[in-house]
Image (tube, rainbow, N blue to C red; front, top):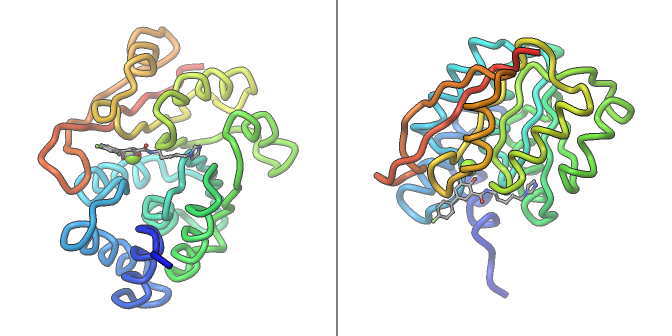
Length: 214
Ligand SMILES: O=C(NCCCCCn1ccnc1)c1cc(-c2ccc(F)cc2)cc(O)c1O
Ligand SMILES: [Mg+2]
């Protein structure tokens, strides 16, 4: 039977990356996506912007919406201080199964809690299930039409505190117009656009960084 693209991506990690070396896992995935098959990881160019935001925030609690194969999960986890926690939500069980193996190969599983299910169902349960009061950093990279409703839900659930950072992928391509309009016009956010390109292509895309002002 035919393998899936996530399965082939995992194969490239197991073949070309060193167990326990997160940067080699990131490099192996980028090489696979440039040389073999495009895949919707945040990629190396936007990944550098993600790294700089993570390093600047130095978060104790991170929420990632949209795990896919775990590329950005590994990138973020490799930069977290000890005892920091990254909760990543994936709706698609096939993606989640691959991501668990990529995260394990990178050796960052102790910092990562991968949850399978819908963000709309899980966001209201974060505090009771994981003992998280607020998130220092949220990376939005899931269904583009869920960025806005899930951000409003996080506000309602009290998961954002003064200074929490939202970093959103794909605000140009595929695009998240309603989310962009909201965070750029709301008096409760201070937003900044980081111009870049769609992973592994010359198409414009970018990340929107928004600080919740409380
Ligand atoms: O759809 C994307 N991501 C969500 C995947 C499903 C999330 C499931 N889930 C997880 C949790 N809750 C729900 C995505 C798409 C593209 C893209 C760009 C151009 C193109 F021609 C085709 C595709 C690029 C990305 O960088 C992306 O992130
Ligand atoms: Mg993306």
